[in-house]
Image 1 (tube, helix red, strand yellow):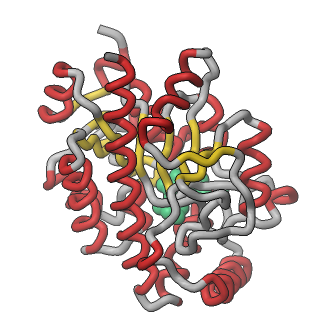
Image 2 (tube, protein in one colour):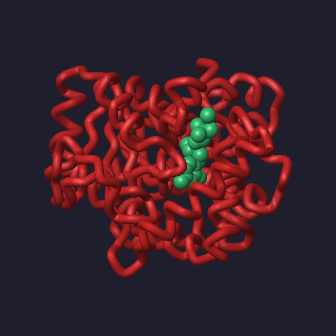
Length: 308
Ligand code: PSU
Ligand code: MN
């Protein structure tokens, strides 16, 4: 047994799905520990799993618990991640440390992709990806999520990226690193709370089976890396763009005043945005992740269909 087998553990539900060749959808845990407040983080994490099951796929929520990479969590474990303030935010560079010291960690998009790839799960649903921060060309604050998308074969369904980031630079970076960005029924990259960002996507597809086909072709060609499947928030749940711009400016200003840096930047900005919208953004956030979980399950089924 290799080292990976010693530290990679599956829930019974995921183990059965793997044996039966059923479609799986990976879900991240930073969104639970650092992206949403309690108790909505627990109810949302559980609702996402239900949404995936309802669409005929099997959910695999990923986290590090006591130094083990866990694929598929029990409800109690999700509750623990949601309530403990000691859970570390784990991206690629943090994985060795959290595993070596036997700690708990919530996985970012980057770290979730790494674990999903080891578990053989090619598709993953979340809310928003990390990206190039504003002034990123000077600060080099560029999320490890982007680098991961260029090297690990897991596609990420998201509602685009929040405009706390520089969306134009984020898309440039993805282009440079050869990451396909697919707009789901949209020509514009979505901006998380809002359906539009003003920046075009390079590919537009609407049908899950067509998205699955594109992914299959990419991987058959041996082109390493994932893809961004950018699924706009449903119209009824979208927030006003002008209002969001003002709120995000305020959040960025506060982060600057407080000298927030490194891995704390994104959680700080997410928290500020939530406070400033008085929770309304939370309802939008919940609606869009559910929408993404649904689409990811359909694409996962499409990928299985193509194998047959
Ligand atoms: N953006 C969101 N919600 C989130 C995150 C980003 O709108 O919850 C989380 C994800 O886990 C993402 C991480 O992978 O933040 C990126 O952090 P950083 O910018 O430090 O790479
Ligand atoms: Mn950063």
